[in-house]
Image (cartoon, rainbow, N blue to C red; front, side, top):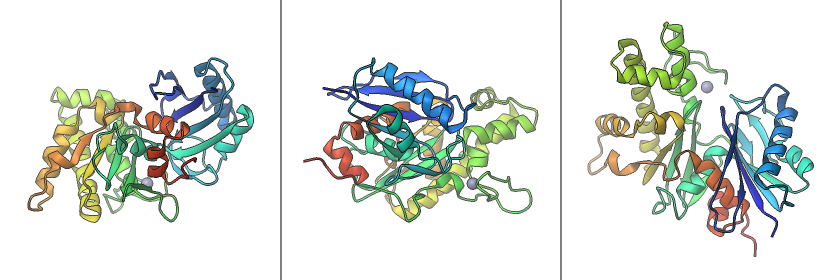
Length: 311
Ligand SMILES: [Zn+2]
């Protein structure tokens, strides 16, 4: 049987895998090459898919990408960290590979994985998946379905304004003071670099762990602002689970500090940050795992994303 394939395009890493019948994945990794614009990136993706599938004829594919995606047209209407805004990625890749290619938001694919049978929120039908890495992204799950929203932007936690006034950081989205400017990997790195500290997010976390005061203050600010935005999410949605993923969050081992801070902020009798906040069961492979389940047409995954289950 011709294999399906799954792709996860991250801000700093692309993961590609052939989808085996039992959904075990052996991803190959690459750094996104954006020097040739969107067409160059599509050519790179084509090469990676053919390599992952060892030249076999293909059946179909699902691509998980950051930004806001119209899941009906596969067009990306806003991608802050990649040159894909307004680009029909699904059609372009479909033309090059000669098979149907669907595009989903990476956080939606991750929610499919984490609210599916093998995920951290397998027992929950209402909640959210939140990723903190280069950027901050969220997908909401309500009644066992990923919610896209009226403008494909439901759950844009990263663009909740958390600072106001002239000092608030301008965000590429056009607003000022967005959470992403303070609590994402790119935000932390930029603030640290400006203050003469380390210019990589991992290095900022490391410096904070070693007690460097400037780095500590930036990480404490990031945790506090992220938890305030999460508190808004908890009060609005009353989620059974908020699954946390993304390189910065998982690599920085931030779950415990978030549980503690959110527990201090939220006062609801009987509510427990420890039972609601959960680390992604699929680690940094959540988006790729969800994309693979969708590419394979797994009924539970199709229901979660709201696609027609094949009969
Ligand atoms: Zn913004």
